[in-house]
Amino acid sequence: MTRLPSLVAPLAFALALCALATAPSARAVIETKSNTIDHVADTGLGYVPKFNVKSDSGIKHVVGSTTVCEASSTGLAVTGDVTVSGKVAQSGKPYAFGSGLVCAKAVGGGVTGQCSGGHALLLSTGTNLAWNHHTMSGGFTTDADKMNIIPPTTGHYRVSAMFTFESPHDERTITVQLRSSAGSLIVCQTHAHAHYNNADGWMKSSCTISGVVLLTGSTTYYFEGKSQDDGTSKAFSEDWRAKFIVEAFP
Figure 1 (cartoon, rainbow, N blue to C red):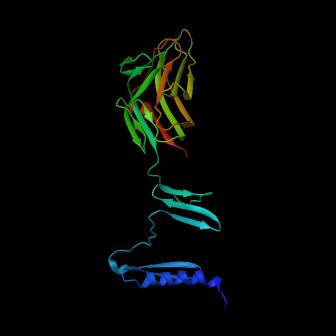
Figure 2: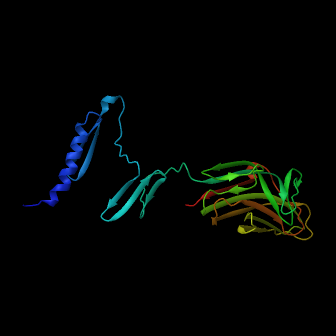
Figure 3: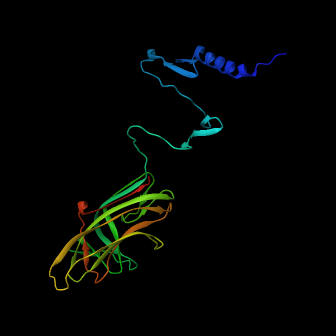
């Protein structure tokens, strides 16, 4: 008896497609030709239906012996590089955003209301910065004081922050940093004043943080400001003078 193994699979696939196309519940025509599957939508339904592939456990796209991508109820996993032409919209990207400072809490002392002239006073021992506005997305959470941020998962995050402050003539250095609840320093930026010892009045300046860091999921992080010398510098509280964003990278 002569066997034709090379024809069995294509013939079975063609018969299955024919059965689908002729079934009473079918709403489209599906044909195979020239190594392609063509879907012709049934426009008589009042709308244009899309070609649906449904599975209760997931769908794999295999080329040769390599699984190129796998879709499941938790998302899409892709093996190898992805080439995209056109714009990419990320609606579920995790991020935390804050703007405007309020009176903050002194580090370690549990003292609230560290204010000076309506601005957050930066103590030499450090001041935890609390925010007037907080926006959490993609699983980020915060606390009632809008001071802490908690990322949803462990991974790399881009940190960008800007602070504006003023200091007296005897203050030399301002430090702003992102720290964990365990006290670990994550990223830090120090701004040094070029002030003369005998200069009068206050000097306004700004300090920025920018970098990609590794954060641990469900761990609390906060921004801290310090006046390195006499602890009398003040951070401006207006929204446009103080803001940050921590977002999943890339």
